[in-house]
Image 1 (cartoon, rainbow, N blue to C red):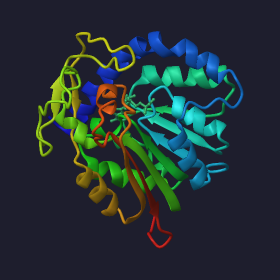
Image 2: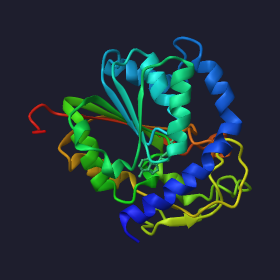
Image 3: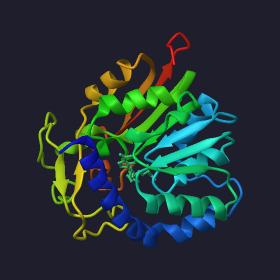
Image 4: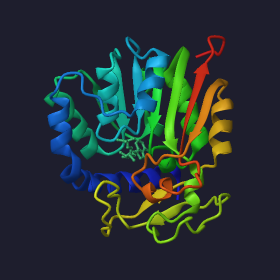
Length: 270
Ligand SMILES: C[S@@+](CC[C@H](N)C(=O)[O-])C[C@H]1O[C@@H](n2cnc3c(N)ncnc32)[C@H](O)[C@@H]1O
């Protein structure tokens, strides 16, 4: 299969998941965003965004899903905000949440690998958050796109699930410490039809979706290969995925998520 075959399959699976997620969170998100200034981001993301100086900055979020995070960033004072996601049905939810809160955010439906050239060098900040990187078959190409979206001096901020969690089976919550099911060095895509209900925790027979494991070193190297400078990198023991809350409770702590900040230096040509 080629890159676009994988992303097209994932688009179908994510569109199928949109009404499933909406059952769990859409009404409450709509009510929350109707309140001026509402933000759903946790303290770690909020502090980092404030530290970057998000107010007044133009921000892109790749794989923005229903827009809840980008709308929150806008409510922290960002200037132009553009969210990109392949699933039209999640983009429709994002637009509905924006309109419920009268929040000015642009949401673009499409594959991140096909973001139009018109967006090149338009952003001070590119934000990538929980559950995005694993859907991307080619991580090197993805960070090339990230770098192209950034202005000189622009910042990349990632707040993601730790790749070590690939070793556990998210459906197997019986053992603690979690049993190791998969190699950290696995490089074949995961294909499964167990659904995407990480809000309700149910499994449903879904269209096939493809998930790609990228080692932490693959991610960092792909960022460095774009000439971006690593500014900060931290690992944390809390679960941001809704999948490993049981692991978070263990006394012996594992890294479950990380934050990474990198910068496009002004000497890098756009
Ligand atoms: C787990 S969700 C992101 C959730 C988001 N961080 C949040 O917490 O609300 C992953 C998103 O990536 C999107 N996605 C997957 N592959 C994509 C691609 N090739 N281009 C754009 N979006 C993609 C999916 O449609 C989905 O909405």
